[in-house]
Length: 465
Image (cartoon, rainbow, N blue to C red; front, side, top):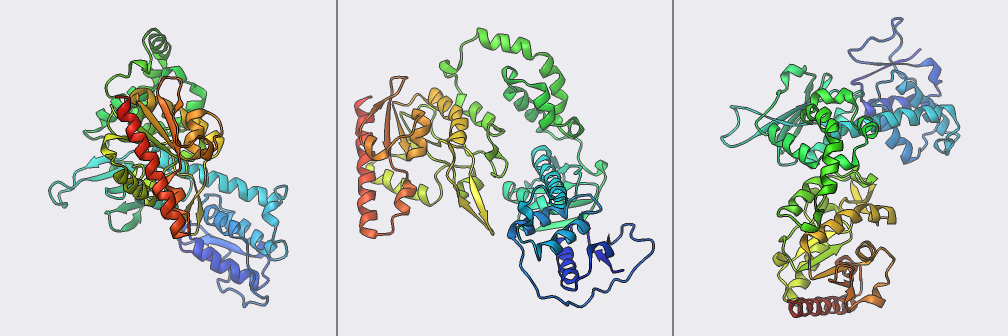
């Protein structure tokens, strides 16, 4: 009976190479023992040599490879054997994964779901704390966090934290494995104990103040909150110590909110408050795969406000709107129209990047109506705080967000439309539309038309002054 010993609990490459050889050698999954180096294995021992291949190689759906890469990280000991069994069946049943009634497929989906959930919890509940490191140059900072995952997800999840905290030196310590980022290279070391992680830092009080500020008692749903933030994670969350008192005082705070004026008063710092609140927005599912919320930016008293569609790849990583290729077209058109971008407020109808992964690339995916409507609350409150004389919808998604209905750009372009608050809405194309025009002559003509729209808007803002 062959015994396969993998190098680590999340050794996907090792499992894949061995499973391919076993399937090609027509070795039944029931006759294979899978172990991990350093863990308790088969007490009866076995033959570690893989059999020679006797069957031709075959391909499997990419969806299976993607799922197998995650399932390997599950803590379930049978995961390697279950994946081996699925791989063997895929040779004659290439659509096996579509049969959700199949017990093996259902079992793999549950393992996959468990890993996905653990990945999400790690992203949501890792709290970095500043640590002193005399080995670093003066002024540099290093941060560390403690987390206890249910599955072997540290290596699987490392890329997310590199992208989100690219310019920060950090370590995430876990009982099984630790991961470190020095702003240049990623490294892994054996597991640690909680005492190795810092117990607090000077900014923790600020974080607690911020959390207490964004806690909205009017939206409190205790069951939903504890489901999303299970109590087993609370011991590592500094803000968790505030939760009992915040819940206890929720009813009184809600009565106070009702008795006081709403955001119509546009208090100073309203945009900063909205930005902080949006940073933890989970109104739709887009917050999961996105790197961060990309909120609007610009002066709080801007008379001209631009609303685009959604952040792109570069905006998602940088956390700022309109800095990618479309943003460069936008800046060029603003300059041609005589508008200083720094005098305007620029935001998007949807605050999280929606994309489809294709290999290492993230391809833009158009947000749906539900996602636009979920984010409309933010756009409405941005407008309420800024009170622009003119709001410009760049493209159909922005027009949908600002009007609440589907708009034909060619029909409404180039003229003011009244908004309920008495200000004006102008609708024009999104700068990315200009990038998609392949004919150079047509592209130049459309760019000039876009500039003409902006010039008319600039003149209208001046006239309304």
